[in-house]
Image (cartoon, rainbow, N blue to C red; front, side, top):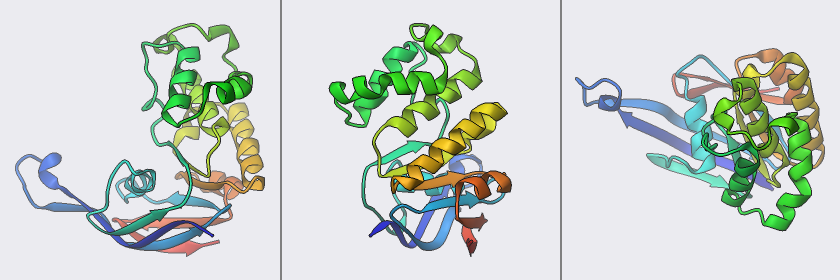
Length: 216
C-alpha cells in the first residue's frame, strides 16, 4: 500500500508575502510527482529554498497544493520545527500531555508511553519546569522524543537532529531504525548526506522546487 502519493503537485506563493514591492508568484514546488510505499524511509535533501519544508507541510496537511493532488494514508506526526508545536509557558510534563491530545492520543495511552518519552529525552529532573527555561538542545530532545513515541503511520522529520549532540543523534538513529522495522513510513529532511545514509534507503534531491533525482 502506498503511504504518500504526489501527482503533478505545485505550490505557489505571492512574492509580495516576502518582497512587498512585487506581486508575481514564487513557485515553491513545481510539477512534483512521486509515491512512497508504506514502511519506506525517504531522505529529502537540496539547497536552501529548494522546497523541502513546503513538501513536508503538504504531507502534514498544514498547507494545500495550488494544483495537483497529495494522497496520504495513515496518521501523520510532523516534526517540522523543533519548537513549533510546543507551548513555552507550559512545563515539559504539560507539553507531553498537550501534544498527545493534539494527535488524538487518549490519556490512558499517554500514561503508558510517558516514562519512555521522558527517559529518551533525558529531562526527568526538569519535568515541571517551564520549557522556556530549557536549552535549545533539551527542547529538541523533548520534541523528537514525543514525536517518535506517539503511535503514527508516517513520521516527518525536518532538520531537527542538527541541534542535538552526537550521543543523542546516535540515540535518534537507533530509534528510527526501530520504527522502520515496525513498518513506519519516515521522511527525513537533511542536508547531511551521511545522516540520510544512516536513516534512509532512498533519497529525493530537490532544486528550485523540482525533483532532480530520486533513487538509492
